[in-house]
Length: 219
Length: 415
Image (cartoon, rainbow over all chains, first blue to last red; front, top):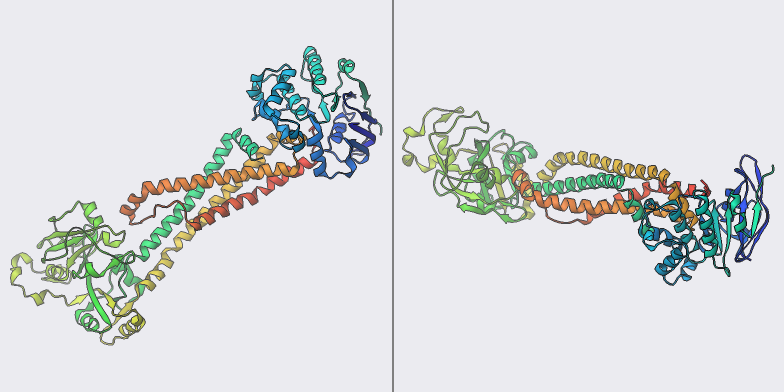
């Protein structure tokens, strides 16, 4: 199993408490997390990525329980086992597409061991996502939103982290581009080692996922 | 992280260049002021060498140094030649060179002395005075000029000149006797370059027929050849440079001169008086230094402000790096690396800039102000000062670095 959450809850300083459904994620599984605005989708992703401390419940990623990890270990766990894609502004503006993609290996020795040749791996992933290699040399400002999102996917996939977390990755794309992007994303994962969680409120994406998890709130 | 910090800095060239400019110019200013101070102090201390004591009328040591070495101010009194000869005969005194001051030529002091002056008086340690052209006095009308005088007035061997009575421009011209340049001294970087030397006899000659500061009889009405030699030997002198047979007796000789009962005279040790004089002149340097350090402090604050201001616009960059597994410490280190890179680069540019400026101005400063700056890259003392500045920058950068650490610790990815 790649990921397991149990009875995860989070209370804000205001007193508002979020309850998250239990998730069990195996390799090759694709889960869509849906919920209205303010339901706690981003908080859920922050908890899964180890940035927010767990207050109650548990998260286990690749047999590592978050409860037993220090902040530094959680940062390392994220670097080694999680690839994150944001909804927009995914790239560092002063780096080229290639440098942005390769950045994921900067903080993870483990992911570096899975990449024998960075140049070849990035070009291979770019090809799979329908991205021409010359785009890699460009800076983000010279790319379309779709191209930027694909670079973010390459960065998240490079070194084959176990869990891919994507926060509204298609919110800036039109319906045709959205469907194509999601197909390319799910096709890029290694079915033996990787699983995907995508947060979105787009119902058109439902058929592309194995499971849809609804996040709501209760006080 | 350093390559990332470099790339981030390349993306913000304008504020980075401004901060580098501020730091570089303030550090270069500090180095330049320090070098000029060191060169001035060295020049100051090396103005007079080879002289163990300066004999003069009883006055303060500083006053005596000012008019005998730096050709500044007016002698308050003279000493009689009789006293000078009496003191010079002391067996502990190896040599004595008298000088008489009072006249000038186009703003330059005229020093009347013996030709032994050019042999005994040294500068910059033990360097002897050298003649760029010609030689010392042979005739009554011979005059030796300093290199700066020759360059400024365009005088060369054979040039005729009159001297003016007194040190100001309003003095009466001794136009009844023309001196002729017999020698031009090589540059020394000391007040000697700005001086004009005539023989004691020549000096005495132009003052024959003068009473109470004005001319009563012109030399034109006298046959100079018929003037007896002893008549040209001065009755009084302004001061004298003394060399001792043994340095061990320095304080004893000085004391015995100061206790000389026949006339109110004093003897000063040039090194002691120069140090005393520098402690007064050198205090200006402290003010410059204080201003410099203030400028550097402001530059460091500017660097810190720039870093803190840029943090807001770099929130997304920090979030992406955190998502990739960068720890808060990584991000803080990136900020520190930026500051170290900026300040270290500024140090290198400042060193280069000062080197270039020194190279450009070394001759100019030597000719214009008699300051001889060494053409060097950096001294260990300067390196320590610059290291201190980098360290201060690093300490100041702990504030933005701590801000980044705190923010990245608590901020989620959705922000």
